Image (cartoon, rainbow, N blue to C red; front, side):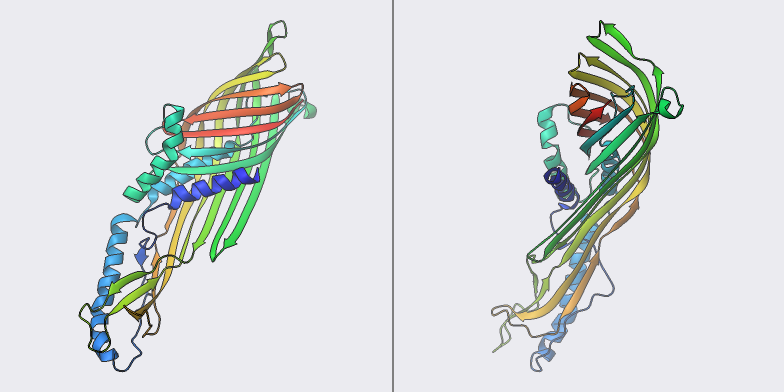
Length: 383
């Protein structure tokens, strides 16, 4: 479970932040300032060049950013949608109608594709890399990946006097924190949900207890999911710009240098009100198949946080010797408060292998019309 969760978080992080130039990730802020030459002999020679060179350097960075990375609203929307899909983790679809209680432990991934869900498994396999390439090429793309995990406990309402009503509550959280060579990754996932289902059509034995139809249920509730990732990237390659191309006699050529230190991340929080209808078949005691359809009403927001504080200095181009105090370039390319898509119709299928009351493996796949998907695995007891 730990490895799968970490893999999902990192995949989401890569898809979210995999643009082509981390050194040009936002708008240069007003608290940026140039280095100053400390050598008394070089100061009058380089300071006039520094004034124009610094302005050109900042303008180049700012123009590149505004053209490519100033806004990532599509990406934030895609991440929010994928996060909402992931709130389905550990669902009980296909198992309603149990006598007393049900417990499911499960995890799953939600994916928002740029155009539409791939039509075959081969295309599905390539979808994440295709989305990443779109981000690299375009800077902003409607795509995202989310992860959810929870323990889901359901109870037959007849215990407290509610006939044909089933209640459930689920919760799961996981945090991951690692540091290596100045790079730091922090990730956190939280899933929570309350649900209620009504057994509209009762169970029926179709073929002498060999095939049992579980009837038809209607369901709703409230589901919350949060995926949060923060990463500090240190030790990126320095950026340089020449101050003089004609050597100063006795001193040589000099250049501006920048050492990037970037903080990246996103925070997706969604609240989903699902409305769905489900039915399923149990074949002997071994196989359970279910289908369903519904619509989700989704609220929440996603923040993409991209910040960079770069130390700047002036150095000898040949020797690398510093001849200045440190300057600073501050960049903020964050995209805040982007809402997920409000209305998402869906269809779903599921299959489970059971041994007596123990559900060994249950696979659930949901297609969000027209361009999203969720896939999850769960295991538990249905009594």
